Image (cartoon, rainbow, N blue to C red; front, side, top):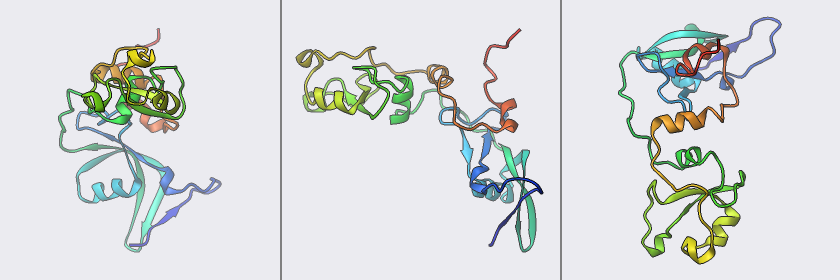
Length: 194
């Protein structure tokens, strides 16, 4: 299928790739905040055609094929509710988010990787309680030694965060792009200003 993106008059050309859709659960909350639940325009159109989502809001962009024309959705909601996970997944991103994208040995914010506080070679496990964000220089310096051997101790003891912990930390690092049509569906649990 060939698809052409129609541009509104007097508008700068915008690639459809710049038009992701915010995906909401059936209760109109984002499937995830961190990372924000976004689908490419192609995945969104497919879900619309398969009748898996409701279109909540649109962009001012249209795609056309030989037999159809459709406005690009900017917000969609699932027709079937998906039970959110009660425990966050143990992922590299979530370790960085828990540690606020900060090396737990020196405080650096660049060239991050992760480190096993108790090295795997010494019986350490790859778990929330033993993995911290670390910059590459600190990770190389610590190597496979125990913290006491190199006098390198994490700034905070590693722990298994709650979903709330990750949401709170995630607000400190908003996405680079938030479309105005998404704002009504994000940050519902934020404190309101008087």
